[in-house]
Image (cartoon, rainbow, N blue to C red; front, side, top):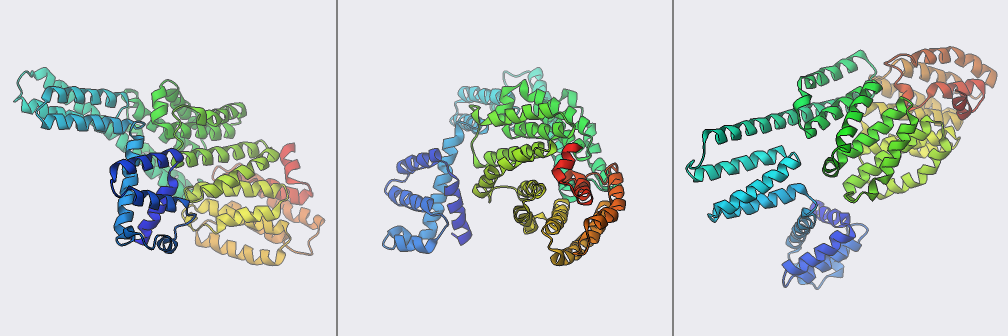
Length: 512
């Protein structure tokens, strides 16, 4: 087993919760007669390591026979853990339950127990229909055909064959629609991640070209699973182009789908969380603050649901979204004191799940925290958080977030009066934006403004006079649909106005 795979074993063991570890030991003791002590001993040792160190492991077990073929031992332990996890979670997975029933039916078929086999196929079909597992239903249909062929089409009539064909056609259409919408959603997300905020007519056209293909789907006759994906796709598109009322409509349609079907919530839990989190964002943008808070309260209650899956993947998505939206809501309401109180909890979360958090999602949290500290004059703290973004190599494609982080970086150094460094940083930022072809009107105006006031000999009266034309230009840009997105990251206009007026940013924001 390679060193990389060794780390996979370490990561797998450390991903297990207490119940999964306990079940593994029980499983290993039953399925590895004569070897269980080796596997469990090795499992316990790796579980207690803070980082994988094979040299220390060999020193600890230098007289143990399992070190003679250690690569094989590690590989078998890895597979043993996966098998125990498969069994442990099988009762909670609809897919696993249906597949188990199908497998049992296959065994009965091969033994010639056709009546019993057919009964189990029907059970699996009933479950698959209930949970809209279209691909599984097609598989079951093919297995039922084997029963018809085995009987040489005796006891069959034309109507039954026609019905089977129509059912298959409908399943194929549902699969095709779902696959097509997933394809469009993925293309849209890739483009959104590439361009970030809409800054040009070309950006808008590219998104419109992608989404226009999805309008051909006749959604009224589609099953819930397809409808949910359709509304998710359009809510995402409209939010991106800042048509928030349209996005709100599609999100509410999806929330209604979930509200009417508790099973849909249980088995599409990730999608349900996405609807709630996106509603918080959109409600905040259209100033439905009370509704946004209501959805936050629903999010807070999610861990108490009996079918809440506390897996690392879901927990990371749930907490990162919840924290990001709570920060966003507090900032939009100019409640920076509440936002600041959240930061210790967010820091603990980021530290605990650093490797599992999506780099873009993490950087959004870093950015929001940096701006919270910035407007409260905690410049060293703000610099720490903004540097986390600038040192994140995974953000090359997400150019807008990285670009605005560089501009916030300039603001922090201005506030720290690091004018000598600021001259260098300004030139570096200009080069970066030029190379990335991101010198839009906002960037051009703002960089000129901060460059003009970043000198030791400029007094307050000079600053007010210098900034007046730039403030007028930025105020006009806030009304420009392609430039207003810059102010979604931070209210650069109000910050510049606070420098011109000699007042605090927060006071100006509250005053409106």
